[in-house]
Image (tube, rainbow, N blue to C red; front, side, top):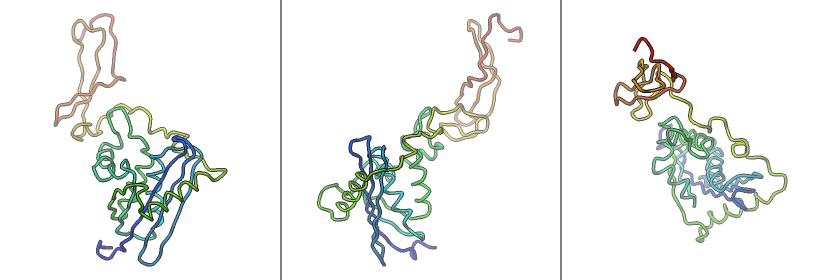
Length: 227
């Protein structure tokens, strides 16, 4: 379906917690050419930022076909992450923020990114509590939702996914963390005066970056006869 034939819709979203972290809720208002729809829900323990992202996910999941979407949110965290390239950069780095840390809420950013591949989405920031009727309605929906009894668990928050742990070591053939060129294995060597050496390391043939591999670290009591 070409962009010109996709329905044009507007989605307003909001999310919040009381306190933060604490019980959280989200609210969505969808304005389609043929109808208006609302959605809301909550979790027993989560964060403001997670609810803002989740609201955007829920809004896009309500669409039954690829659409051109203008999504309004009063969360600068959400809007800046999508418009200033934060999420695109994390994705390019295989969902790592730094060499050792995932971005926070990576489980939700992945879901949102997939939806943005289906729909053409423009994210726009709106000032909260400033009289915008649809933004105010989303706030009402999210606040009502978080006060409901027997809220479910936000599994991504309460049971942190394993892939949010420390970054595993680079493997041969994986992309360099600087230029994305596949790294190759090179033999290491012992240097006089050191109590250890690396049997091999990983090396980028393009940008010349070398990566130590902890599994290849060897300690020596006597200088190796082969060096």
